[in-house]
Image (tube, rainbow, N blue to C red; front, top):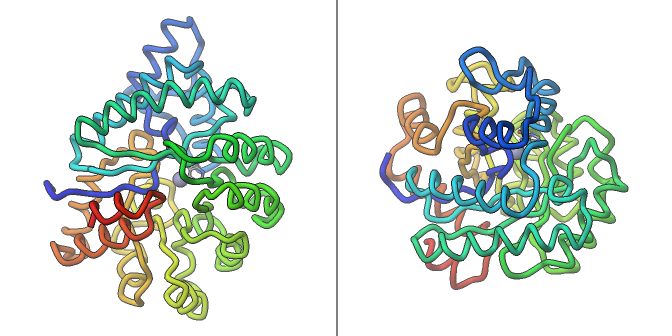
Length: 317
Ligand code: HPA
Ligand code: ZN
């Protein structure tokens, strides 16, 4: 699918190809047994196993130079998929333990790469991401890192990780801190949690929801999402790989779009889920019959919801 695409939900660490992680592990003589299966793919059986595998793989990405190399590789791959604008989740927790000075060093290295990539035709922004199962105290440190470095490449704040841990509203201080610094807000919700989890993310002031697909089970919430113009960062291939839905045919993205919800399409953690943006589009075309009209619409919605300045947004439309 050669059309130009906007991707709003892509975890930088989760986009690391297995070969990239194996290369770093070799350089550092790190033991990554259990991270890969015998075909060399990331190995996990379920969502908790995915998170463990993700964190073990990420443990070998250390320091500004590794993060710069990773971002360069990931943006190259985005460009190959026809992505012209990508927003990447990146966690200061993994960039020096959410220490502000270490985070600034990592961010400077990533910003240099993003500036170079922009000149080569792929624009990007970073969304600082708290990790829910690391708890509210660590999220506060992460939010401070986000607020102190807002503007420039960092334009958003979000939260991923285990959705079933606590309530999203336990993290309100962090979201408020990020909002005061002018950052756009998004939160993973309605991936593993039901409609109430999505409502909590809305209560945090989020204009976008990571996944959000389980909102389909509550017609009043669906109406609310439409009325408020909330955008869902839907990642169908991720949902199917992790078993949230059994098949592309069972996925609710088309029903949400038909109800008027602003849905967009992203890959989440592409090598973990054996997907790419072209693969997502191809599957939407072959299983749901989506074509130019639908793809143009989701990219329009993505442009509207992008955490960037108005002139960049207009250019994307
Ligand atoms: N869900 C929650 N947290 C995550 C994910 C996901 O799909 N990917 C990386 N962190
Ligand atoms: Zn995600």
